Amino acid sequence: MVLFDEQLRRLVTEACGHKPGSPQRQKLLTQVIRLTASRLWRETTPYYQDALQQTWLYFCRNVCEGLTGQIYDPNYGSVITWLNAYLRRRLQDFYLNQNREQATTVPQRIRQSTSGGISEAIDPIDNLPASPQAPPILEDLEMWAQTDSNGELRGIYIKGRPDVNCQVLILKRLPPEVSWRELSEEFGLSIPTLSSFYQRQCLPRLRKFAELEGWKL
Image 1 (tube, rainbow, N blue to C red):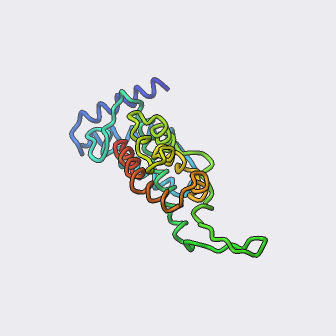
Image 2: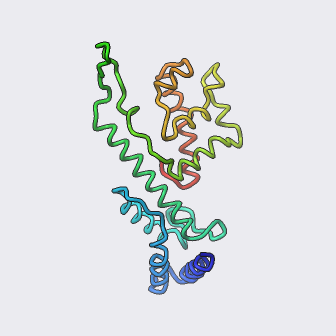
Image 3: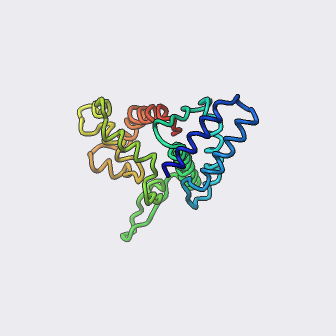
């Protein structure tokens, strides 16, 4: 595997030594794609091929010049590791979009009859099945929130409730997320209060971190 990674690095270095769009570069990059294709992350989701196409496009645009993202740096890992990281982020994008689309195709609130004949309002979003295993991007987000190296997330909290801060809410809202109803009961605060605080204070910080990592949330 080490020899294979070194071979890929040499091909990439040689390819980037040629002018953009030149036949020499295209030939070498095609060779890299053929060598790596069978070693990339695979899964049977219906949107896998779309994510894979985006990955190859990202590879061609950023392996040498970094036109739409961070340029490939062999010091931080192999070509396969770099491509797999991007591929998994795109798969996570498709996963989130699919769940979001499913949530918008059903009524926002549904009345459900209980055994006692009393109807209870439920939120279909709370009933979406949780992903059985957290995608790699979520592992990175969880590590970032848990570490909170500068203490910013812990320092942003609902007035008078330092225990209800951005670190706590971000970790609880990462898939498989805790519902707003459960959080409301846990902290003794209304759903609108928690949701509004999360949208205004926590989500922008999460997105900022994601953008710095080159992700799209």
